[in-house]
Each structure stands twice: as C-alpha cells, then as structure tokens.
Length: 269
Image 1 (tube, rainbow, N blue to C red):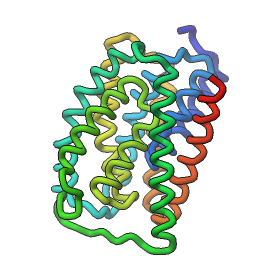
Image 2 (image 1 turned 180 degrees about the vertical axis):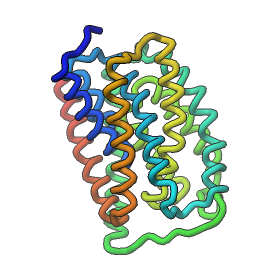
Image 3 (image 1 turned 135 degrees about the horizontal axis):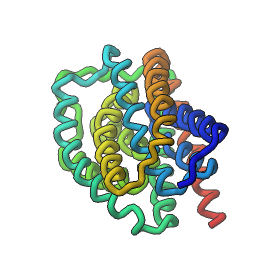
Image 4 (image 1 turned 90 degrees about the vertical axis):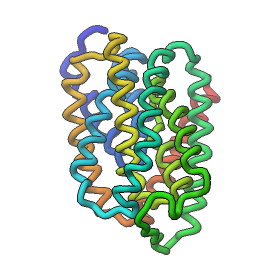
C-alpha cells in the first residue's frame, strides 16, 4: 500500500473517531469506518484488518472509563458470559482471518443486510413496547433471568460472530448486543460494556492474525489508535449520561439507516 498524505491521514482519523464512537456505544462502527478507509484509498483487506485492530483500543478505552457505571448484571454473571463466549470467539476469529479472501463480497453484504434487518425489527418492537417506561431488571447471578439453554446460544453465536470478526467484523457489535439483549435479557446500557468486553477479545485475536498475514499498516495504526482511544472515552461519557429509552431510539434509528444503505448497495450490485 502506498503511503498516504497528511490530508488522507486526517480523513482516516476523523472517520475512525466517529465510527468507533458509534461502535462502542451501539455496535456497527465498522459499517462507517471500512467504507471510509476504502474511500480514502486504503485497499479493502487492509481497511478491514487495521479497522478491527484499532477497534480493540476503543473497546478497552470504553471499558476503562465506564468501569464504575452501574449495570444490572453482577461481576459473577459477566464472568460466566465471558468464559462461555471469549475462548470460542478467539479460535473462530483466527479461522475467519485466514478465510477472509475466500468468501465473495456479495455474500458478505447479503449476510450483513439480513442481520441488520432482523436487528432493526427486534429493536423497533422493544422501543415501542417500552415507550416511556423504564426497564428495570436487577439480578445477582447470570442465569436467573436468562432464557433456557443460554449457554448453548452463547457458544453457537460465539462461533458465528468470531468467524465473522475475522472476515470483516462490520456489525459484529450489533450482533453481540442483540444476543445479550435477547438471550440474557439485559438492558441495552448493561449489554454495551459486556459486548465491548467480549467483542474486544475476538477483534484482538483477528488483529493478531492479520499481523501475521502482513495486512497491518503501521502508518494507519499510528493515526487510528489515538482516534479509537478518544472514541472509547467519549462513548463511555455519553452512554453513562443518556436515558435508556433515548439510547434505544438512537440505536433503532441507526439500524434503520444501515438497513436502507445496505439494501441500496445490494440493489446497485
């Protein structure tokens, strides 16, 4: 990849900052970042690789600044979810990284469009159902309010999301949030930090895989990592101070715009 000039690197910083800001709060940041990097002139494989590697910094930053915020799942519950998902996602992400070039782009876009469509419908239903009503779910141990067979759901989802993280990762945060809100029945505010915790491990495994495959650009990472750290800090500040219902509405609207964008891309193919 040819070296980028100062104007291009500035554009990379801005794209990564705003993309990861949405990503740490609501998932789907790579839907903005990866096309943005490609528009700047970064090859698609390097856009994916460097986006995912830098996104780990955004997630770590978010978790650090959000660590004292109250959530409705205990530390014991968080550990249970992490233990069941993280190891599987690490292995799956490594596999996904090695098959990134094997799957056609058209197929990936179709999968992402379908997932976003399902997520939009589900989130819209929840927004309408809980309009004006606070969702109170406080419990001490993972499993009390979870659906039956939650461990199986987590493992199966970890395989799919982990492989996808290695292939593209665009929208994987949305998938994890949907999983945590549907299977674990968590409020969105409580699902966000847990999604960053689990997703960060998967993306780090994918990033290390890309490093060995020679897809990382140090010129890009030097610019993108500070943007990601700043995005994580800003995201933690915003999430901890915004109402649950407003966050849900913003999340639903974002998914709706993503669906429209992706459907349009499918029709233009």
